Image (tube, rainbow, N blue to C red; front, side):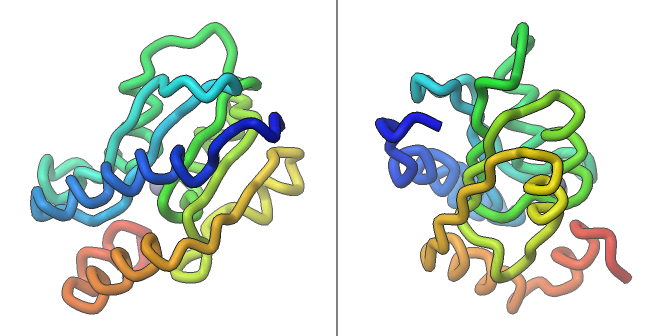
Length: 151
Ligand SMILES: [Zn+2]
């Protein structure tokens, strides 16, 4: 991946989406899809609570907002949290070349599997991302467990 990309600035776009989700009363997870030139293609956030739609994860929202792309191998999915199995599947299905995760301490999702599949995974170990989500989980554990498909 190009060393000229500003990962903290890219992560900030996803973090702003996560905070917007929280302001809407939703789960604070945000994502943004960029190309390798650093151009933003689409951004979104988890809207499970807002829309009553369990399929609207941050990554799927950003993916849909980006519209049709001829190829995904030169795109980078930036997300505030390690992608779940569902979103890791999306990354694999469309051949997204790299993933920048804000943090993977709260939830590691499918990042080990993505690495095994040859996807470049960059973990930013962001305290801001971790704090935003862990505060939410502390207040709404049932919504969080529903989101990741655990009883
Ligand atoms: Zn997901």
